[in-house]
Amino acid sequence: MNKTAMEWIDSFLAKLRNERNYSPHTLKSYCRDLNSLTAYCDKQQITDWDQVNDQHIRLLVSQRHRQGLSGASLQHLLSSFRSFFKYLLIENEVESNPAATIQAPKTARKLPSTLDVDSVVQLIEIKGDEVETVRDRAILELFYSSGLRLSELSSLNVQNGDDIASGVLRVTGKGDKDRDLPVGSKAMAATRDWLARRAEIANKDEQALFVGKHGKRIHNSVIQKRLKYWAQKQGIDMNVFPHLLRHSFASHMLESSGDLRAVQELLGHADISTTQIYTHLDFQHLAKVYDSAHPRAKTGAKTGAQSGAKQGKK
Image (cartoon, rainbow, N blue to C red):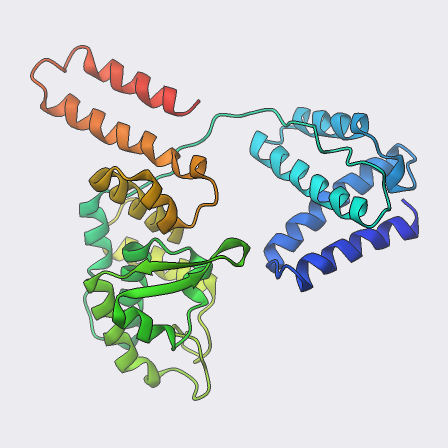
């Protein structure tokens, strides 16, 4: 690609960063996808974006599919291409969006892992009054109480402590969309305990609610490491990570309420199809209960449960 064509990528990424406030992680992903498109165009001796057509996009996707890229990754690749060419279309740099009608191959959707209720309680009811333990207890309780994403929790500020104390927490999720979340009494109490101890390690002018040992906003990687530490210490024989608690929150809420729309709102999913994956988890739970409890389930119901689980993965 010529220099001007490459400058359009820089301009597009700058727009995502400055006007849409995309995270560095998301920008890096866009950059990686567009670099793969640029490399393909170079091999095809394409020098300008208006020379790219739908056949080029289709061939590139097919090539990456043969190389083993998953359906979800191909969907992401195409999404990056569509967004970029939509931007070029608005800027009158191209006459059409060559990626607009291309579809990626579909792959089976993997069901998320979850902890059962007893395991969650075993994990989050940690003992000790050391300041880091008090902090971690509040973090664990908030993850499970409100189904927070890792970035949503780590970005909380001290002022959010008042919201938590009132039982309603406002967070900013994906796409800069705000949502209000209920906070359970256990999480409220754990956060109150942490706020009473926070000054012991927080820098004087630090605004972050949760801080690390150096007094600054706690890093996502530190939270991940602390969850693994507590999982091992509490005897949880499973890979524990922040999103596992979010999955567990969603699954347990759906099991108890059956209200898919409410769970969608709590999780901040733009599309309810994203939330529907938890209905398959709910079926698996019910099937296991049936298999273990029904007097005539031992021979045939197990196969039925397994069949239902397989259908959920389609």
